[in-house]
Length: 131
Picture 1 (tube, one colour):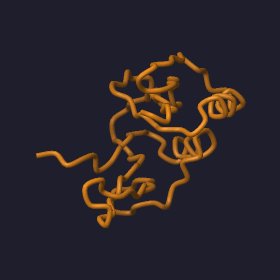
Picture 2 (picture 1 turned 120 degrees about the horizontal axis):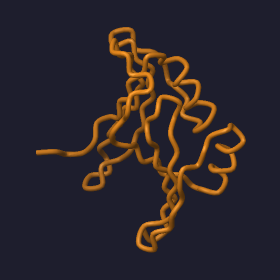
Picture 3 (picture 1 turned 135 degrees about the vertical axis):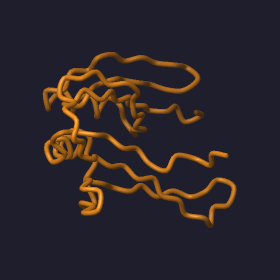
Picture 4 (picture 1 turned 90 degrees about the vertical axis):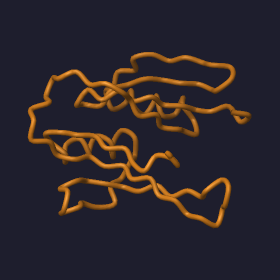
């Protein structure tokens, strides 16, 4: 029934502020703004494992909400794969981002957890080459 993930959608009362944080702290640069949904988005392309000729796209967007979600608890998290976790953490610390926790899992790689300004939990993952 499910073939994969089509997108990640974060909701914010201030989409431009949150998009600027993701640009400055995680270097996720928005491709544009969607006037139909009033979202700020970027797409990530990849190839189908079973048939590499098929290109797939994952959407990542920050969408406005008409509900006041400031200081409201969030559930879930987005996992971002990184090339060098140490460099990413150093960059985030230089931006004043608190690193909540780090861990190494021998079967998977190194992980760290932070939150964006709206309280969304972020998991950073540097996979081991065999992972």
